[in-house]
Length: 606
Image (tube, rainbow, N blue to C red; front, side, top):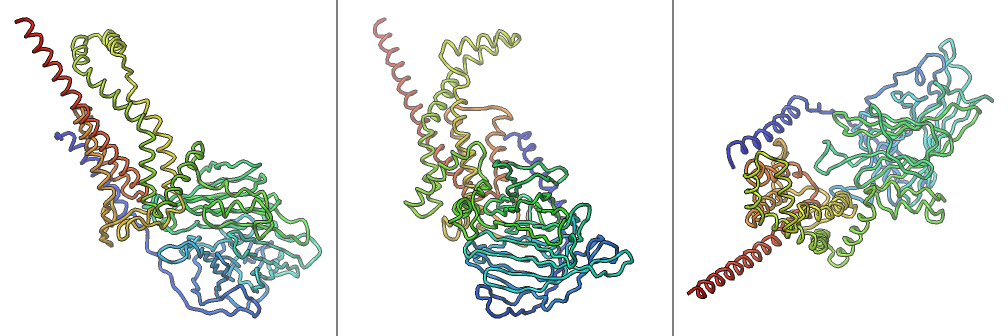
């Protein structure tokens, strides 16, 4: 490598490293101090399905800011009923461990029993305690004003019911005789990843429920983020969050403006989708206003919030029903809500499986590759081995295209001397040069794009396989090699030197990116040995700059992805070595034949 090449690579790495160092040094998030207090709660007798355990009571750092709730201003309301218990408690089904908070009648934790993180049930609510708990209610559509009154609760088999009474504030700033009761009920299926929330209001007087704030009665929210927890954007697990909306049988990705999206049209459902899990909100037939919000805070990356705002009531009583799917992105758990006989709620034709995050135009190819991966896993119950076998099969399928590409490239290389002569001869006449080169290609029956076009067939497979290996649910927690690659959905690590953290690579030394980078450099060298030489800065950057760049880009890629690319590289290297040997053998035979002909010619002259 010459001085300019080295300088270009070093400067690129230095600029990125300095930028990240400045960000982590001077703009690091402040530590969050959380006080905890151990409390206990008792459950009334007869609540067989539920278990109540000792839980932490975390002081809430948010407070009401508007005049709708807990205020002395006219039109607001205050809690008038008492509450017997304020401690958090847990409720379990076959699939959920739910921690309820009577303060706000909300959910502070929701864990999935059958899916683990570090041996513990995975948490579906990413909240550090500085935000309202999930499924809180807001007065009107003021998203800064959670109703954090303390509710009474009782557990009755598959239901957890919260109740509280509120009193309206009159024009003189004093409580009036008008009261309303709020009943918020959670209903669970025994083995469903879907549950139901009903919100019921009853006015003490025979007139409309007195909740009307700019045309809205209340808002039900899921916030601030869908779990599992992560702390960078993007993190080492290539984490993301996406919004989807289902309307009139069509799934769409809403376009957020300034981090928000709002619609008052009827929707079937809305979803937050991540790599492996989804939250899907399914309202009833009321014309709610749906608001989606995203943002990036210091402690909750990629905030993803869903708000259902209910229009003001026109009657003395009102009852709304919402359903939420919170679980894995697996079709077998989502499609059961298309048939009323297959789920515990008698629901049908919801088509929640549309929330599966698949490639839009290559979903069919991704499904084929997934079937192959599962097939090989059935033969050898190791997903690492299955990925290698799928890679080999893909390489065999692409062999005719790869061979044609190499042959076309070899023909182009053979014309190198003639092309250089034409460039020297017509260096001052580009039009004539192009014409002569076209005639040369035509005479030698060579398509200049012959080396590139076959490669286009590989791109759809590459994109579909990238999508599959990046989010295939069964790879989550799947081990390949004990002690090294223990989770194919995560980057591997051979050395961890935390708490020390280096720019670009963090606190881990990873072997797969190193092997991948070395295989890229070796592949370029083998190609050059086969005659595919590139001179100057371009050739040197391709040989050294590209592998270094991809080393950092893919350093935190999931192990399954890097395993595929590395195996593909090694197979290509073996193929290129074979082609080089074959070419040299053919060239040696040709030279031997030419030498023999020359000797025969000389003999005849004698």
